[in-house]
Image: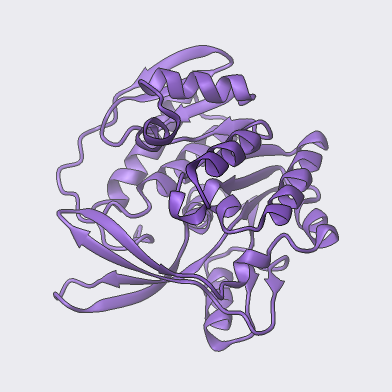
Length: 300
């Protein structure tokens, strides 16, 4: 039976360090797009995946949409914004850890929720809707409200809503605004996929259990708390499960570690795998991804 996942957010042009020092390669990436790309590899063929974003009318936007299509990701609901383009970011690496420099002022993705009717059409009939705190952070206040209203209506109609808080304070006017928006979004989701280090920094969670409990109180029936190389805690319908991920020996680039975990976990969970197997699938893919360079690594 055909199933459909809609991922919402921003895909950007990535400049990532190449193997030779001082050189950079280009690619397309962005947190929710990374998850859609890896999910396309992990989900069976009866699942279709659409990406809801904005694109300009320039050559880079066309390249981005061509890459999505070639990757098996639908672009039929991408919002075209004349005069805009694709955001750009550059990765700087030190000992496998990354920092980012962004240029996203002209990003068309900021306009993805301007048209309520188009938004409703994009989400209509979706089995699963996936978005993140970055999705919310790039939108103006009114556009965030439109997006959450559309997600809430789709959920009421039967869609499963998945939310990765992905806290990025530079996208927000202040921490208070960010945390309020994240909490509001959490009330619209069935599955939450937070990262504990972010949650501890901005919500003050004492441990992974506190993070899971807070998202459970907000309304998520299933919460998977990622914790770097540490213990992964899952709260399902109030019951706590703990998993220890395998050690990764060679870490090259941690870009998209969480995004790829989300993709493999969701693919396994949505196709009926036991909880432990779904967590193991997420950890295994994330381990492969951080052994390569850039967000999207060749899975062979």
